[in-house]
Image (cartoon, rainbow, N blue to C red; front, top):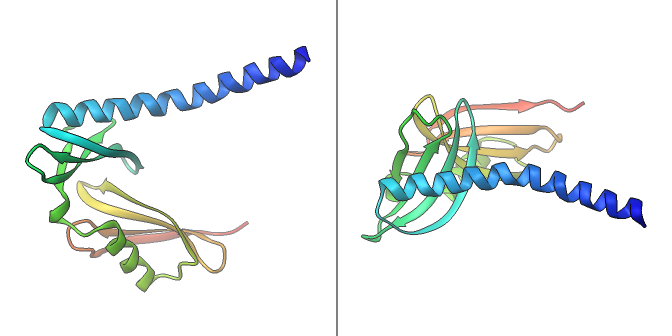
Length: 152
């Protein structure tokens, strides 16, 4: 019984160690977005890991305008504010990618930045079991790049 309790404590410690940095990054993203915009409500915070990692804050301003605030992990870089209305939706990005790639299942559609361009990253598995990434412009859905990882 003592060994089981010890294992439980160890697992709890490992879980908290893994989750804590994510919670800290989410809180930092929320704080940065709120400090630079008149935020009425934050819907959610997601993460994008590209050349630079971002906390992507989906929120609504006090004036009712839906926005995304992309907060770079590099604290020296300025956050980017995007109006929802200035780009395509996640669903439109997914549909564009699906029309051009063999997508058996879509795992995630993430907003982010590549080389200073707001993009959607569509993460999927094709019918051969390969993991793929398809990137389109947030502004107009234009193709940027794609790649696949082979199976072992």
